[in-house]
Image (tube, rainbow, N blue to C red):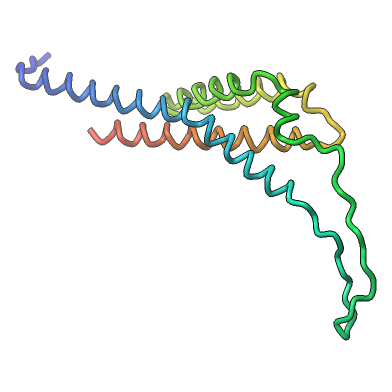
Length: 165
């Protein structure tokens, strides 16, 4: 076993501390900054779907004159983001834990853990997601995927930056 001189030992400590700071910063961004990002995406999706439909849709003939006018029915009974949030309590905490677990799985190279996280989340929410309209289920899937992508982005960045040394 070769001994390191004191300068190399101090250099290794600084490298370790820099790597630890990178991982900690990326972890904080992955877990805590993910909540507003996912919420903003879901609000944007809900606002796009909540746009009022046009009052009439003309069916055109060959001459360009309207043949008939069909009135669209408003979408009734589809729960929005607020209703889904009230019915799916604990979503914020579940999202934080999901992103933390996914970050740890990606950084440690344990892809099977990602499947476990998704399985536990899906099975745990399954009874609450069974609705006739499926809107809550769609919001759940979009929120889960966007949350996972956000955490994977920061975990990949941390992994890449740590390996620069």
